[in-house]
Length: 104
Image 1: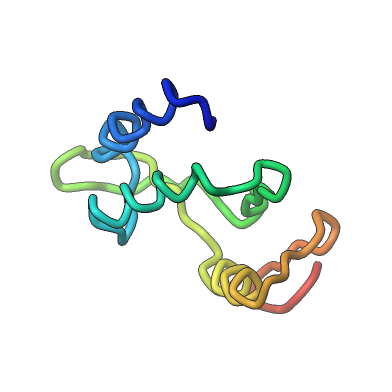
Image 2: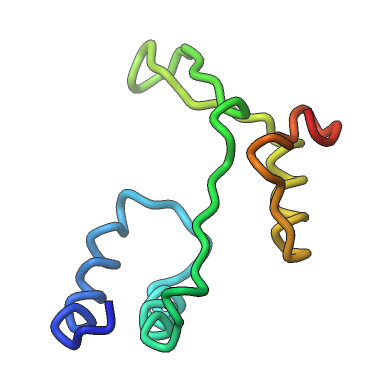
């Protein structure tokens, strides 16, 4: 990641996700995050993900697409995950938060 040849390709990588990833960051903020990556210690990076159980695939009718599938979520549980993350915490895989009622 810190190889100079990789770093020069990061802006194009961020740009390639522009239509595929929804986020509240503008292009300037996203570019700043990419630049910040050069100063991070890879040993200190931890990847986290929301448990699949919080998401369900549902069929809906869309006026443009017709019948299509959407990914619905337990938004109360997702809010709890974000609150924990902001507090520097993350539940273990055994402590899945579900329906906003704490670990299940």
